[in-house]
Length: 311
Image 1 (cartoon, rainbow, N blue to C red):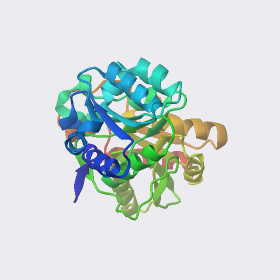
Image 2: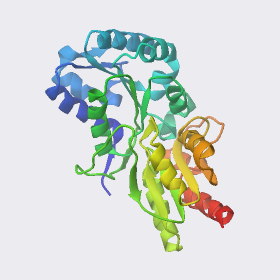
Image 3: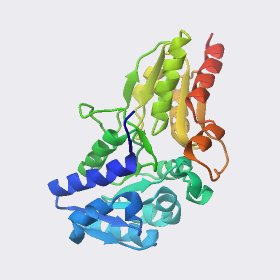
């Protein structure tokens, strides 16, 4: 199985984008070897700014560059991009609708051994709650590459959530990512799984297992959390049961966004596979995903529970 980390795809996409658009600039918080902005720094040193371990200054400077007509990509770990620099993101970027792209790597539990202090499990909640902010969680490398280009073409603040470990390839170059549009990977009539990020692959694995048990389950990649594709949610609801899956707290993330649509427009049984109200801990990514209930097996169990309610 071919794998690539979304942060790796991000770094390579920046170089490709930089060659096409001279207005693209990149800022980093002394983490370029980890965020992979080092590729851009090597080719475009005059357009790369290492701001040091100072995310507040990074975001404020990115806002200034955005107001000057540049297209800044502000890069750091997700826990710092959203927590440490929240005020600068909210008041300096989102409130005045500055054209800044925040690329946050090392999100979720799959940071692994770095532990809870570096595991952003609430970043989507924070960014989704800010007015004017678009929130994207790519599922693989190709979707990341296209999301970077789409973000650069979009006028306004964008948050792109990226992971640390290599993840399975789902899409090829024929795929077309659009901000605000979900992609149905598998059709089904018995239930629907709406997933984002690394959980999309787990959802596909779960659908295969459920198919073997005689259940036809829809799988939807909801890579844009905000604005949410309401039509895709309602199409999923037509199956009569919806399971959401995210490597993130269930409080305020993808599951909450889907629940808001279902509760107001088409109530159906809903289950959320995600991190409960807790921090993570140090461990290997696969071990943490299993411990916190973020595997295909957990999705299968959720679908079967809902199927019982639906029947």
